[in-house]
Length: 320
Image 1: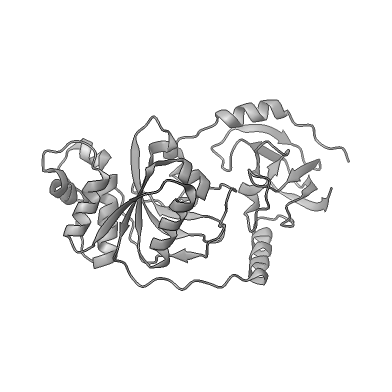
Image 2 (image 1 turned 90 degrees about the vertical axis):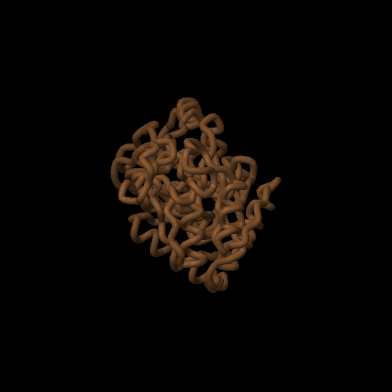
């Protein structure tokens, strides 16, 4: 069976230019920004349970009618989530911003505002600034491992030209993702890869509350359980695959879209007809093995160029 010839130059060019808006992504609460690099490396799964999301756009919350505060309340909304989780006390975002900056404030709040508010309301808090991915991972893992949330500052829309945005970190190194967050913009729960999040961190700032709830138990890494989980994912997605850092070929069981990213909002670069053979490579950006990955976001075609097989299925894989 002949191998499908893909237009790699076009695919690489479009994929490099693709940067879909975070606003589009947020409509899907289960959307994953899956970055294979450093996936779970050196970490053990931890999650802080019982965090109640707050949507800064929720008009049912008391607010003063100032549209600037309504749109800029990501920081106070994160503080409200941390406060409720650590102390079970409720404070609305507009109440918090009034304490931070005064009732006439019409703009952003800052890292020091959040640290100051939490420390004054029963949650002693430090502010840290990571200078490397390893330090960033250590800070977030240290918080979540001990049952404490963290607030991070990232670029809005993951675009360095659009200012900052605060999110709450609730989980690290869980199967299938690296970092789990609550985004106060719509109150969704996106997940991110370590390298993706670090590269989109604004200044490496991490707000570290010292108070939380009892940490969740850390599961012992179990290769057999991981294999069982992989098999379950495979069955659910109607894929037959083997987790190996090698090249494999497969043929399509239906028309398959090849997109510039792992989601239906990404551009279709080409379509592979049913019954055609494709060659796949499973790798990280560093050319290393990627353990435990969801195939719809982690399969890559053509070594050295990133792409995603999406909106379809493959079966009858075999080693090339």
